[in-house]
Image 1: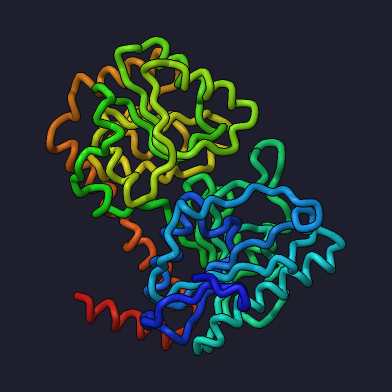
Image 2: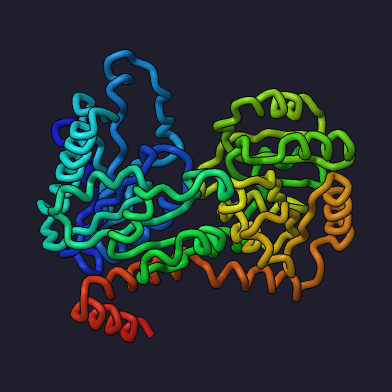
Length: 412
């Protein structure tokens, strides 16, 4: 499907609601990686505007010296939503970090190439949508009509030691629209730009709430199943998980997701994998991964408590809630507002007790299950992206605001 001559993948021809408006999304990942919140947002945003996912360029070091981790594109099919397309920078056009003028020029030139895909498809208005502060060079092109910045992380990693950089503050102040995805990030960065919208991580509610047949690789794993669905990474409290799994041999601990960025924590994962009651099932495509929480007895959000996790908003929170299952998590900032529907624990003893209590309730009453699902339903990705599209139309001016309002009335 890839057309090597143009550096992009053409998609279907159906028209979005506003086909004359195009969005170039500058993202830090190649398309074929694990399914993240920006995949959820941008594929749905293509229902409103034409969207180009602009992949990052490989560094010149990788081009000249080789190396670099190849992306496993088997994680995602090459069937894209209508109105959505992919820009893959040519291999001979790598990223340079310095000198500054060259870094800026290459970033701007790639932005213009991605933008050209939209112009060729009839877009009269182009929006630059940044997902990292380091992509701010593209704004020097001056050829776009509107700019957005979507904040999903704290890039300084410490609220106490490393302040917000002047560069990111200027970016937040300078763009037309800001989206922020966690309460702590909103408190830290939400006051710089009056056009800032809180957009938490959401859920494909229908996919996660609709009962599905038990996956084949789960059938042989005995109950009670204590499950985690997501990337296995260093932000998880792997030492806690090891202690729990060692202490409770009567529980089956099930991990569904790829292992990534483990660093010095890798030996802990190896120790975990050697326990007979621990099961690593590997990466699953999103259309299959949504079936796993339904067949767990308790779902986990076992994060470390540190400056980084203070700012995160777990993607799997509402996915678990949509399944109606009991949840036990670390009391990080984004989970505190949900303490009425999930159990929070710090020490191994508290975790043991919280999981045991959840198992004893056997999923709790139908009212509690309904409450969990109702919370998840309110943040369905379709609803959240509708809000993003609405805010973009407001920034585009009265004509688009009125057209968007008319579309809403027609949908009623």
